[in-house]
Amino acid sequence: MSNHPIYLDCHATTPVDERVLAAMLPYFTEKFGNPSSISHVYGWEAEAAVKQTRETLAAAINATPEEIVFTSGATEANNLAIKGVAEAYFQKGQHIITIATEHSAVLDPCQYLKTLGFEITILPVKKDGIIDLTQLETAIRPETILVSVMAANNEIGVLQPLAEISAICRDRQVLFHTDAAQAIGKIPLDVEAMKIDLMSLTAHKVYGPKGIGALYVRRRNPRVQIAPQQHGGGHERGMRSGTLYTPQIVGFGKAVEIALTEQATETQRLTQLRQRLWEELSQVEKVHLNGNATQRLAGNLNISVEGVDGAALLLGLQPVMAVSSGSACSSTTTAPSHVLTALGHSEKLAYASVRFGIGRFNTQAEIDIVAKHAIATIQSLRKQATLV
Ligand SMILES: *Cc1c(COP(=O)(O)O)cnc(C)c1O
Figure 1 (cartoon, rainbow, N blue to C red):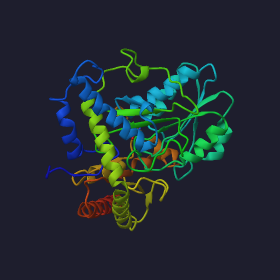
Figure 2: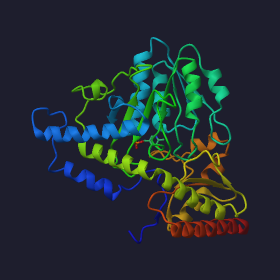
Figure 3: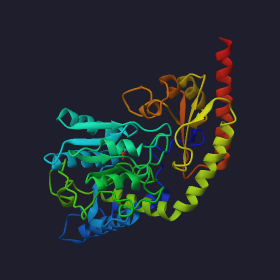
Figure 4: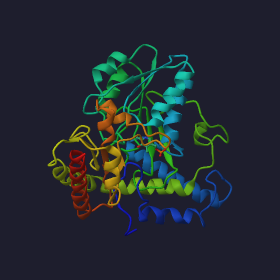
């Protein structure tokens, strides 16, 4: 990979940690059993491995193992939570609240429910990307059944005040779902202390494999009902049928276990790398930091650059670093990022944005190369702009 650019796109995905891969490998070949096979040792081995990950995930968020439902990732977990609650509670009410900076895996299920007659309120965020709690309180109505607000944003890294949001939801007896795809293993999560009813998780943003995730579904105080969105053999207590993908589940557990063990030191290290990068970049005129400066993921830096063309900026950076731009990270559109426009940016400034996602395998030497090249690119583009 020596001729590859430096990977700084850890919000899109992360490599599988070698330790995770090693844990997974036996479950493809020797321990290949179906965890639902209860009559022989092949099944028992697989079932034991699945049980262990269930326990690891439950401990990671202070839940119980029975409250973990495995899914194919956070997209499916979000769909199951939102559509599952909508279907189970529609007689109670048909109003759902979310925020403008959510991932499309939350916004799109909400849009879909709208076509079925549900009412959706999409709250704006403050200039720093954080929810306005007063607006949330005002938006809740007697027919509101669910509030969905993400734990950590995938573009600007902003952390939402989960405990404050849930206090409002509890007070009004509304269920609270959070998409914690970017948060698991990176910030402390506690479904009891934070009073969370549903939480979406995924493995591949935290050095685990792609194609595996989970939905936490609260069983007590209150017992949350969700209508299954995939029917079949009744796996996962009927909430999500389909043979469990043992190798990926083993990898998920190992990835979260490692992330939790290393969380404190890694947060410190990443914060220092991010600050080093920002100290360099912020010396260039008219480069802005997007999102709250302190309430954010340690590895996230998102900047907007005035006076340069977004496409040219990305093109200039590409040979040296793999980063993502301020356009929507959707496979089919090149619209400006809805997250950045929600912060009040113009389309042009939203396009001229760069997300640096620093992760476990980045070094200080890499950050220095990235800073130097980014500054040179911005200055050269601005120089060209003044010449034409
Ligand atoms: C990556 C991501 C998702 C989608 O997760 P998958 O496991 O890839 O389906 C959902 N929400 C957020 C915030 C994400 O960052």
